[in-house]
Length: 389
Ligand SMILES: C=C1C[C@]23C[C@H]1CC[C@H]2[C@@]12CCC[C@@](C)(C(=O)O1)[C@H]2[C@@H]3C(=O)O
Ligand SMILES: O=C(O)CCC(=O)C(=O)O
Image 1: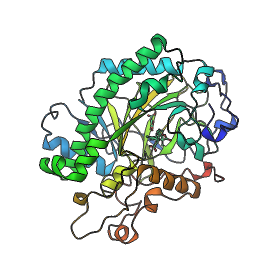
Image 2: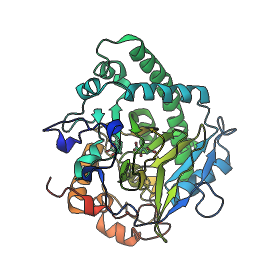
Image 3: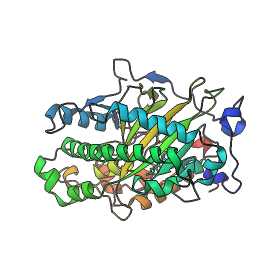
Image 4: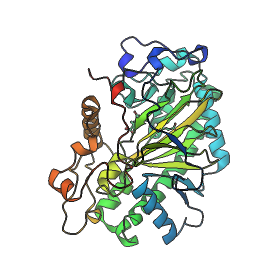
């Protein structure tokens, strides 16, 4: 697949035909840190939040689990969420059908420069000189039927069933996102009344928007040289990741620096905290660096359901998240503004979150990337940066 930086001359890279990983797709530095098993008991076990039983009245135990995971990891596995396993199976099946479309159909829907939606490598790929071992498709569930006509111009059965299944999924996920937002706010220490009654919090719940990004990681003849998705933090509030039964998602943890492989738990979502939530919570909940690796024998599919504010909304630390006597640690930004900052950060090797930190408050709160469990600290990826853009 072309990356956005290669759009001037889009060419389809045929992963299926590749017998080796070409230089264009070979990433240096992939093995700088060890990979540990996040499914085994012990300090590297990825936290699990089980919503079963907390649906109507969040139990204190669940709120405490969310707080611990968001503060120490910026991520957790979510089970007991009520989205039927049978629906998730249909979602994966429809995604596989979509990625199996002929190259010509997929190329017709290629993401244009600067577009959020479309087919091909995700927007982040434009900052790197190497190509990832994956194809992706981003769309807005609100605009699903129109967007998908680019892939299926004649509509037809595959189009209809893809749209039907994704709409059903979106309905469940949007409701789950509301539930999780409430839990996150309670985990910050807000009371029931504050969650529903304070203007800032109410507006976030009412205006939160969803974007979906589908990933296809074809099996790879030399998985140690290739990378499915470069290490990044999500930029929005939070993300639900559905990974198929083939694992590949890894979370970066500091002290010691390591990649924690997230186990593929059937029916579970991985929830990632994003940068705008990091800002909203005044740094109490950490955004998490994560990446996806590829597999020699098996294709892998994943889906990211991204929640964030509408484009015009300013995101600033919630009053309730700033300790008494302190000033907010971050300035207010809109999502598009933050994406601009992140672009600058990528091309200079800086940290986007630090670029929107308010210096005095940051110093007072000791906003050091190396502090604590270090979920927000960055793995080294700069050697692959495309510095020219
Ligand atoms: C709503 C979103 C969130 C986006 C941008 C836009 C659509 C696609 C999302 C991703 C998906 C892949 C990683 C990422 C880093 C990327 O390049 O595209 C994500 C990005 C972000 O979290 O910033
Ligand atoms: O493939 C995965 O497990 C990760 C997906 C992801 O991080 C994304 O789409 O942003």
